[in-house]
Length: 441
Image 1: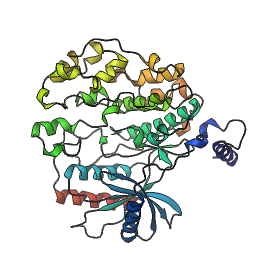
Image 2: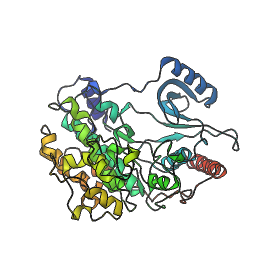
Image 3: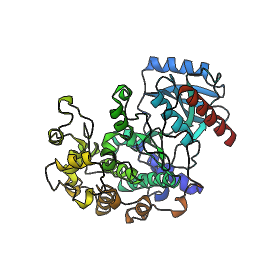
Image 4: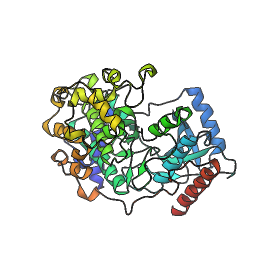
């Protein structure tokens, strides 16, 4: 980037420059320079940092804990050799749960094969000490200022240009990801890291899929605790991926032959929340568009587990939330559904036209409404593609076709055979992934 443009972007961020910075490198307003909000307790951070200093290679100096997830702690650390700050994810109890273990294996395997400015970069996977007995590992990744969830729920107000730039950068990463044959399947604001210059880094590939791999692996992958259920429920849960609020209808209905359109639906949901950060929007406009509390086929009330009519009357059923806004789909819109139980479920919902996007987003312009309506179509065959989105007039001020790169080849994951992997197989695949990443650096 030319130095003068970099200076303009920095000054715009700091509020020190008059005029407008280059829209292709638009900086967020000063209130958007967020600290990482997911801080753990001060005393826990100290303990975690001490453990990191003991276990991490000497090139890394753990500084502070910045988050905690189901797999362990995430720290901010300083890489003394590279002279940069990094994010360190410590995964403990790695082989305690085979489903979670495979997610971590999938994440590092996919990340190690991706190289794009809008996808979080994997920097290092330190070698484990004992191949036969290791129970934890460290994953060293690119560090960002915050994520979209934190940005959306901060008090900052964004201009339409900032929002457009954020969405465009997200689409750049998604185009590359899809060209590599990967469906993310869990896109949500928390999985889109952001920096003050409006750059976006897609992260968390634990639920992703290479499009050429088997559709029905044996292990359930939906939620912690699912592994104790009945075998049939396990199979149902296998494809029940993505956080519910951002889940495309075809995933809700357990379609096996879904496409990259599942990610486009998620993009529409994320965009809706970003629009809520504009002037003129209400605080509630920053909330998820479809905040359902249950969805097909999992019942919140086991006494009515197979009573579809009962659940379609619940206001917070995920499809009910979608139909309240978009209206009921036509027969043509649902002829892609091949499961009879899913068709029966849809037939139980009351007919309605829906409140419509215009009513909900009165503060948004026509181009924004067009993007929403084209990404949030019930029928995935009618949903806009990422390439079509990039050509949308909404992005004319920020588009740079030279940045719209594709992957050199599709990614394959040899361990995704559709079968359960025992601990020995998992360990072997972890070592292959770590070794392969080290050789390719």
